[in-house]
Length: 333
Ligand SMILES: Nc1nc2c(ncn2[C@@H]2O[C@H](COP(=O)(O)OP(=O)(O)O)[C@@H](O)[C@H]2O)c(=O)[nH]1
Ligand SMILES: [Mg+2]
Image 1 (tube, rainbow, N blue to C red):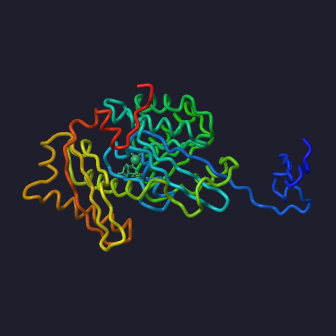
Image 2 (cartoon, helix red, strand yellow):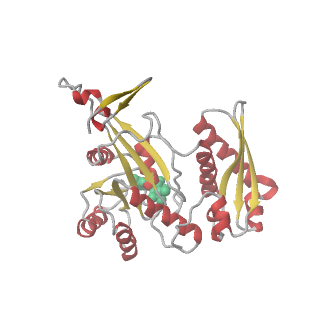
Image 3 (cartoon, rainbow, N blue to C red):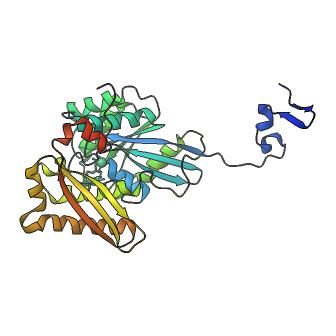
């Protein structure tokens, strides 16, 4: 198509062709060389407790994703953004590839599998302190079945693992996963993480940055506050409590000091409310204090924290409640 203009009396109409829309420097012979940006999604996947969230926090340099020694700490996808020179890596931390027994776990597994479909690079994180079991292997391989993008394996926790166990995982990964490369790392102390990052960067697609360069997260501040309270619950309570509780910020009044924050702590059964509150309110006070300190560190400001314990009957199995709490259940279920 020709570009040109037509005179229709008072109005001059320009017809623009795709060539006209190209950036000027492409038309010029003295091309100003602009470095090419690369950007992409990197899915962190693996079995529960492998160290995915620890690795995300290590890569981003902030405590973005909650970490505890308990399996199934991460319930929803957490995104961390890392911009280095002309590369932007958008890490998707995911719940573990787990055995599904209720609707919440279905949503968790769904979040992990969804991240795999969006990934430009897959990073399989393995706890190499424990020898591979058939169950681990099967879960991982089923999840990776349809992955066609570059894949790396991080054999994590080498600070603690026996060399024999690491070697077993390496052999398994070479045979079964056939990744682009295998790295031995410690997400905890950072050993081996730089070479892994270099390899991932080299496999990013050419693409303009997806987020502003200074961003490190994509979820709202409220999400992280809720998660910090939940992390503290996982640390301070035992038995079924950690898996029966979900937290959600109900109110946040900024522009005052201290910032006022009210968090709902939903429990599955009425009896759990008493456990959370404790004798003469001792348990909830301890929870409030430790959570507040974490939130103050996160926000860098003084906080007044109100915790409201509310029963939400069997919410883990209730589609409507899960929806209200922000969990998505995969459509085919
Ligand atoms: N020794 C050791 N422990 C680790 C390492 N990475 C993670 N962990 C621990 O493993 C547990 C699970 O970590 P987390 O990041 O929550 O695992 P996720 O479930 O895969 O997200 C926590 O107690 C971490 O401190 C590591 O490199 N070395
Ligand atoms: Mg996690």
